[in-house]
Length: 443
Ligand code: GLC
Image (cartoon, rainbow, N blue to C red; front, side):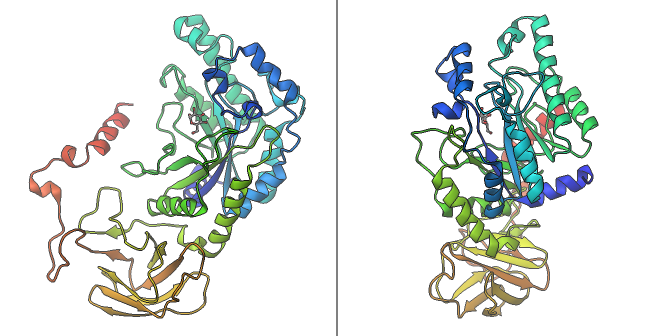
């Protein structure tokens, strides 16, 4: 295990991770909130343990699929809000070892990840509905609060001692308390004392080492390491009636979008009660893996990219009519998600281009450059790959693009537009980034 800084850098460059939501709720197949949403009596819910055989849960197969997809890490639910632990716990007897399956599924998964060089991220819910006293008792009574929070700290401690070292601890379920109520500072200190290199997310209501936007791809502003968690269909835990899986192209496009903003995509799988990975998810992950095998370099080590007439705070750029851009060093990657045909032009490139290739093909692509307009020729009529292709354009300096999107094509240089010079305040132009800054300093 390296240092915290090395771990953070590795995480930022990982780009793609797989989330797994698996637990007792997967048997019923109406999502991971079923205990709460259907108000199932706890005693009745716990009886599901007799049916939890997990006979098709195969950690080796799961991690092989993660690897095959091009993802670099696995975030595994060790215990969700229902309080059912997927590991052998002395603190919480409501766990997989004491069920029909009689196995420690977290251990199996962590070991498989280590065998295959996949980073290990462990999800753990702070609050849970089968605790006694529970979160509501804890809100109403001081003694119950102490017992409840102490119990949570003890569970977290047991987890990070048992699975040591891991790369990341992913808290969730932080209601009904703020960071003071959870004693989150103390919680993080305890975790870091056991595993100094570990990354911690912000879901115990402290900022954490990275942001976790859920079901959307907007990066934090100002930028800091971030990871968008997104479901494949519309459910985290297995839902028997949810067949709305995102097509492969959409997943590739999401990956490109997070890469543009130097973030990660945490893509969710919801295995069914037996532990089987839904077929559409398996297929999509294999196809994404095929794509990344060819185009991987256009997703790693990304750098900020100057695009358009003003830098939009930490965001990089306007729309492109053929697809998105990423950059690394002197290379500009053009993700041609809408194949342009045998020739097209790139407007606004401010550097001199040196050479160009299509990722996955050896042939050099021809181009000519006139001022800021670069014209490519001799591309194939149809995209060389099913989901378009990526052009890697090497320039003499780190690339940037200057366009007057929505205005006329400039024949003369215009000064860069700076809204602050037009009498606007930072609050007018970026109220969100400003207020989130305020929140951070308040904490
Ligand atoms: C939310 C949900 C939870 C899911 C998680 C994933 O916090 O409560 O069910 O596990 O988001 O990010």
